[in-house]
Length: 640
Image (tube, rainbow, N blue to C red; front, side, top):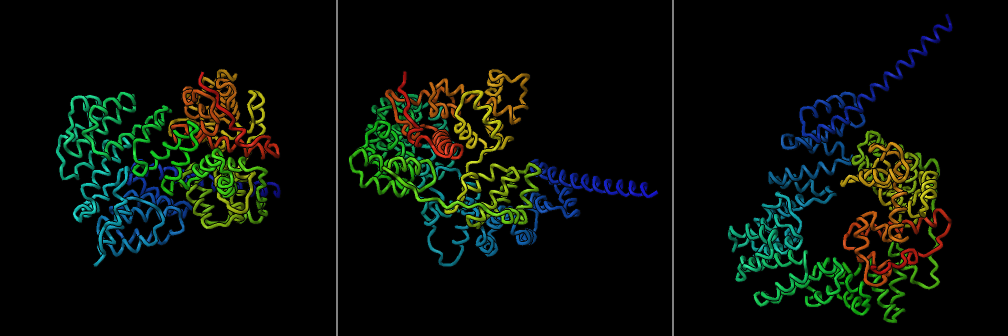
């Protein structure tokens, strides 16, 4: 009887446990369903899920309510929205909802309520900024709207919420004909024809046929020039002709130049200078040696940040240190102060035998923990960095992180694969942490195997550091086996993987690359066959051992196809091997110069970070680096 009673009690306990677990899982599934309903704009279903989660007092019930409120904000009472934001002000979504609420208040011109909420707003949103300028202008004696001109002068599209502000600015004369033409040129300079077509409508000289001319300038630019379809007598017509010439240049710079010379007298000095700065930009990105000549025909002070940066890159690629120094010294201060141009200025000074001036720049740059900082260290003779302050948090410090409400929410969201929301909660949780608490949080994330969060969190420290967290080495056995099997440098494999996925095996890019080493499906299938993976299926790309095996094989293949050059192989891994080969020069080129002059912003940064990662992994895995970063960058062979 006694044994039977114990069995009954044990059964009841197990039944209650499994029933409770099943109930909790069902509620968690409701959260996922609520998010899907939000994505599908299914307000009715979303309300049903939100009510159920609220009734069950689920930890993430406020998220379902937030999704419902955001999706249906036009129909929710303003007082209810304000109360909800106040109640959940410590949630990561609070400020995002406040931003949507501010847009609603701005549309309603409820400036007192807008100003109250705006004072607490921490995010950046162009629509909110436009309404904020309106709110300010609504005050008596507010003065001119000239302070809002930066919202207009951009090549980016602005939300429709800004239309009313721009109408006010135009009526006031802040957006005058020159401002319209400035932005018109900026939009066309970025090939944003749809935006340009909208902007030009604000010109006092606007005519309906400009719309078709802009379309033709984009699709048949040579005809626009040869037939002189756009009149040179108007400013708009000349800008359309300039756009057509630049569009031609993207296919053939010399053809565009010859076409320009036939009509150059029809342009004024500023317009001729703009053409040459754009021609130089196009040529520089194609590594055409004439780029610097064309840039020199334009006024450097009239160039935008992209043009002046590529003027410098084209000059650097020619190893013209005198010219490079002159360009950097004439750059806008904000551009010249970038780490890259401080480094290359120092290199220019060294080449000009002005080592003392260079040392001052390098010594300031060397302590910065990034690619250019480490390159700067390599240029300083007998450089001895100041000892870094290392910190290992205690167990109770790490455990304390898990008690934070926002961290609990982050964990719940991450467990449901709601990673975007989970990361936002994590960021909210560590907001304002000092270095030691940041490292405790990074350790907590690492213990949870949130490797991307651990790395990104550890990267935030400024004085106290733990580089074993910044440069994590998970899956070491699998990585080592694959690196040995395919004869690839393990530090490079880790450098690539850190940059590609931050060690999250389920990562997927917008382009479709997947898994730990971010392989495209066709590349993965091709590499799997050659790496000896039998019965490969597309779903296997997310399996750790498979992804590491075929990814490392592909690295080995890329390195061999580039005759052992890791810089080119890294560029090829990101942008394709044919491009990596095309970016070589006609003579051997310093690896750091090759990387600096990669025309794709994403690939340039990618190569620099991967090589910096590999440099740091050499220290992490071997205790010290056998070569400097500059040595690791090496030399790129000339085109064959």
